[in-house]
Image 1 (spheres, one colour):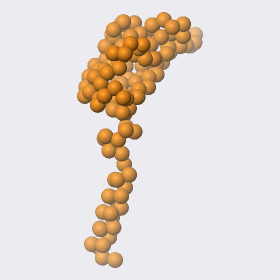
Image 2 (cartoon, rainbow, N blue to C red):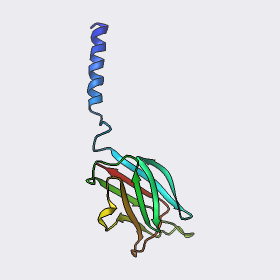
Image 3 (tube, helix red, strand yellow):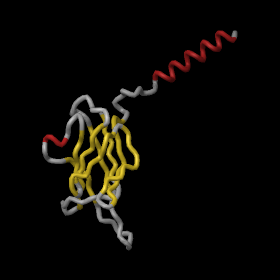
Image 4 (cartoon, one colour):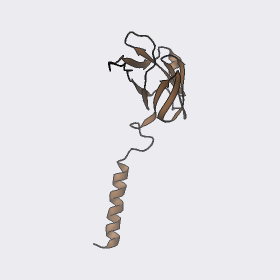
Length: 133
C-alpha cells in the first residue's frame, strides 16, 4: 500500500469518527448551565455557560437570564439544590422547582424557586441548573 493510499484511509477514518460526534446544535448538549450560590444575600456564580446573569428576586427565588436566548420555550431544564449542614453535619433539605406562573419560563429567562421540605422559600449553599433544547 502506498503512502497516498494510507493517508487516504486515515482521512476517511477521521471523517467517519468526526461524523459520530455531536455538533454544537445537537439536542443532547446543554444549551445553558449554571452553578451558583447565595452568600450574604448575594448571588455568586461559580461557573456557567450561556448565562447572562442570575438574580436573586427574594430568598429562594431566582431569575436566570440566558446570554443568548433560546429558540422558544420548548426546552427542558433540571435543577439541584444542595442542603446546608449544621455543626452536627445533619442536613436541612432544599428542593429546586419551577415557579407556578406562566411567565416564569421564557426564551430569554427561567425563574425557579428553592424551598425547604416544609415548602418555605429558602436559599441553598449551591444550586445547579442545566437547560436542554
